[in-house]
Image (cartoon, rainbow, N blue to C red):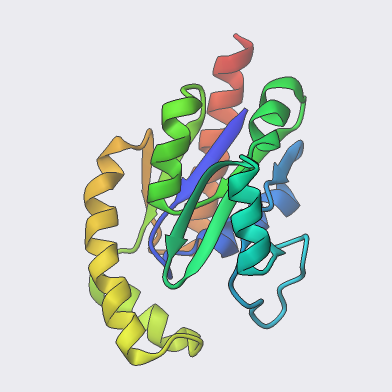
Amino acid sequence: MLFIISGPSGSGKTTLTKKLVCEVENLRFVTSYTTREARNGEKDGVDYVFVSEQQFHQMVKDDKFIEWAYVHGNFYGTPYNTINESQSSEVDLLLDINTEGALKIKKVVKTGIYIFLTPPSLEILKQRLLDRQDIAQPDIEKRMEVVRKEIKISTQYDYIIVNSELDYSFNKLVDIIISEREKKHS
């Protein structure tokens, strides 16, 4: 199975996906490609595969991505082999991706489970972004504009979770994974 988690910057996607992969059996994180610089603590090949713009464009030209997008000044792409693995493996795959990418994948992978994480409020989300200290103030305002659009798109997802508290959101995600696995095997 392929589980796709989306949500605005600061919604808790990365924190929750890392926790899920560590604590849920038979769940593996799909590593996307990006042209952005690695953040503190990120590892190449683990959090993302970090590539140059030239390498990324060559991969697009070679049709290596099921989807790719330009987001917040950088390119991101999901490799095609992800889909093949999710359909032929006993290990489920987890993808942390923006809404644009998720909707592109949804056109190809009808059987994916699409989950949207949303903040409790726009004010709380803005504060989370300010607290991260790796985003400049003008960029935060741009991201808040994107957030409003992403929240409107969330109606196209199978599940929506308001991430007001990490443990609650984590438990909801685990419940969804268990429920979807049971549906698949019944």
